[in-house]
Image (cartoon, rainbow, N blue to C red; front, side, top):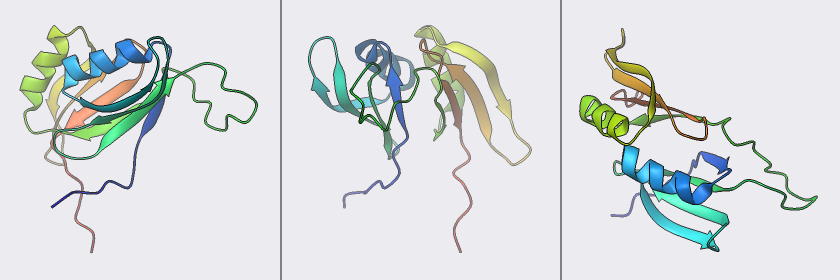
Length: 133
């Protein structure tokens, strides 16, 4: 059965190709597709192993009709993960800026926070959200 995703966090990057490599190496995202050329990413989709993913593209002038002109480094995202300590170690080894080392929350999650080279914040935790009624 295919899992459909209906919410896609998005960001722009000064060096989208380098950011894609970093997100794969440091956190384990998987590049699904990338459109553009050697210097520019018009659209990329990265999958998260537990489901869902993100979309990103290169920053820069896209013309007067660019209604999605996000500034690089202004993105923040919470990502559900199973092995927080292992993921933290992987991110640290890949050069992620660890903002907050693994810690336990009062609502039962184990989390850590990292910043990627473009300045975006990533919070990883075991909290999967509450079930909808």
